[in-house]
Image (cartoon, rainbow, N blue to C red):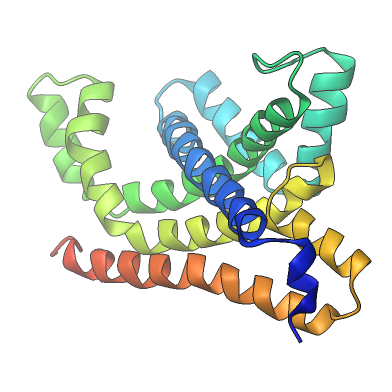
Amino acid sequence: MFDFLSDYDDPSLLGAFWVTVQLTVFSAIGSLIWGTLLAAMRVSPVPLMRGFGTAYVNIVRNIPLTVIIVFTSLGLADIFGVTMGAPDDFELQGFRLAILGLVAYTAAFVCEALRSGINTVPVGQAEAARALGLSFSQVLSLIVLPQAFRSVIGPLANVLIALTKNTTVAAAIGVAEAALLMKEMIENEAQTVLIGAIFAFGFVVLTLPTGLFLGWLSKRLAVKR
């Protein structure tokens, strides 16, 4: 029943999911940083920054992720010669370009989640801080964002789970993650349902504990109002 595994030993299966985990972790870190900066721009008193943040989020959220990932490969790498520090290692280059595309896409959703959290912080707190002489960046980093993050752990967990599943799109540019290995196995073997079930179970193992943990953390750290 499991004869098809003879051509794909455990290190290959585990290695493919390990690539998926790395894509998720690095993309999550990048998305959190870039998404936080975008959220700061969206609530900034500077019209130019506010306009850029709004335009970026509205445009990127309405572009399919596959288009963004393919553009990072065909556009940035092939046309503009962006090698991401790996001009001779095409596998590493594809991996890094996939992270770049995932960060660019996911950060828009992180931004909106954070902005909704910022809107839950009472305006009086920011006004009091400004009355004490704090700058916009100080008010945001010391008072607003800490409370905003605590109130949006749940929505950010959903974004992280979606990001984990979205890493499968990296297969479009040849990144050797789980979806690409599953495609190759299905092409070479007849047991499509069984192969699909194994990889589906793998993604459940990756996402379910994350969702449960972050859901618990969201309740534990919820801001009492």
